[in-house]
Length: 228
Image (cartoon, rainbow, N blue to C red; front, top):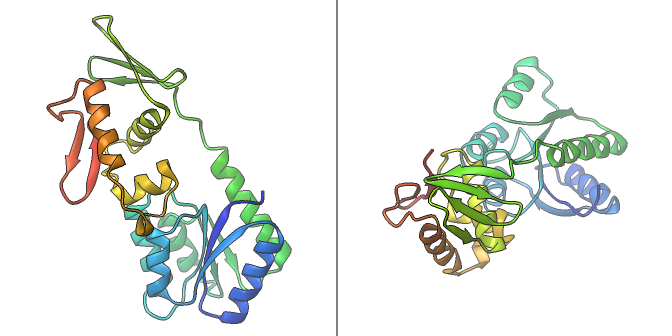
């Protein structure tokens, strides 16, 4: 299960170096932070597949990072790494959305097994539906086509289809520009200046007959969402 990028937020430099080295030796790419403030910034803005998160950090603690991730990057896989073994901490971490909780000290073999298990579960989550209802018709993602009840059809580009699917899978949640650039375009928002997203939104609205923005809604200053 190599090739995924893993973010490690851990203040103990020796532990962090050991984890990063083990991950890179196993074929993963890594990002790292040694405190809660820089860790929060990377967690929210970085492009990665899994977060390994210590709970006790200078600045923001791991719980506050996890809470903010749940709010702004719903579904982000997280494994907590902590010496805090109290049941309440474990339960709180899992309730806040962590996928696993690994107690320190841990072996490299155990850590890599947990990482692979979480990444595998993420990849094996239920596949999205190929056909979804839209106002006045249906979109078929298998061939990138919108069919309307009056018999008319519109073809979607691959990126338009990916964008629409991502917004539909958010189930009414407001999705930010940064999130879309990370997960649909695969770009780092901090290093990207582009209006292509706005153009794709405009094209989608036209093809969905939604010029009044009653389905694909702009939430000013926050992003976009679709209304069911």
